[in-house]
Image (cartoon, rainbow, N blue to C red; front, side, top):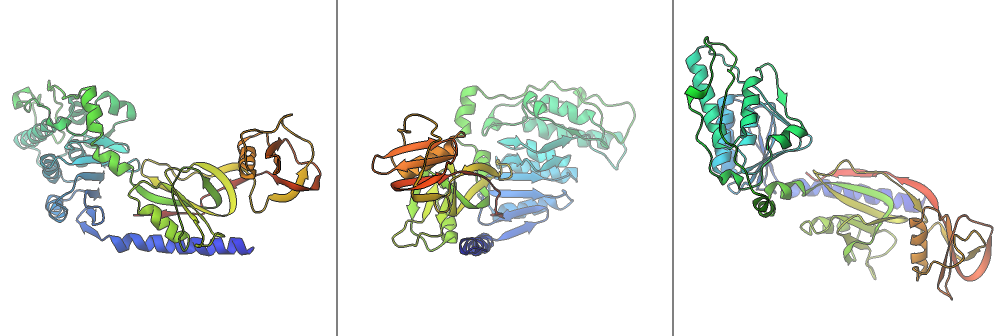
Length: 427
């Protein structure tokens, strides 16, 4: 194993240990029944698991611990209806936002909590069905159903959603697809819960079967669905709690031998790669990627480059780069690019004769580095030669026989694939 690879391997191990230790060190995870809170993020409560007969009390305890909570994330198969309604009422009264992440599901009683959100968005799975009752008498069924109708109407639940809910048998589940979510207006911008709503449908308007059954009856409602104007939506989007949450970084993908070029917002001299990674995390979201050069010492530096985005990809055996990923991002990609490594594939005082892509030099490249990157960006380019005295960049379709030549720099391209060396869960 080369010295450079060995150093990078050791640095990556150190980065992983430090960053995995930093999360728990800064936060305390507390569980209240099916609810989880992270004291480092006091604006979020997560529902993870079934809603049991003590869930409403557990939720109140979580609220006391995080009085400034703004958002509930939901991942639950459902559970006890009355507790689901009590939790939903608390969510509604406190004007919390509700969010179903892409890898989450919210079924049955969990859907009441979701629909109570002042701002709500489903990106995972939302499912509804009728309630199932252990008490088969018609009066009890009527009271249970009227409670659900009353509360869901208060939440501004679209009429079509209510209809689907009460027409789906309790042993089945209607899961809304993307078209349904748009069609029925299930997602909602923040603040639209304040729009006037019609009162709950009276029981006389609810069509019940003539005999008692364990299945909730079909419901016919004529409640208007609240709406928000386009202008209101634009202004409310600026206040989106869910957008803020979805954009927070929750993973860090690390790459070795890959330089994220350009998009710099700051450059610093730091001790090592783990210090560079921590500096990126400490910027409050301004930094979304970084590159650390392991061969550049702290003095004179800089060796840590913080970036607003990943930027241009460039192969460099001395580089360790990291990209912050949010919940909205897919699994970190692999990159297959043409690479001219500035350490291993660029040669001083060497000329590559012939194979020029053009009869004229590439005029936009003013330095040898510019010439190298121009070749990297050009799919037809396989090599380059830069004339230092004339400041001329010659891009080439292939590498001919090299020859010694003073004041010339040449480089050879090869195709490489870069996989994430590791992905660190920041939560």
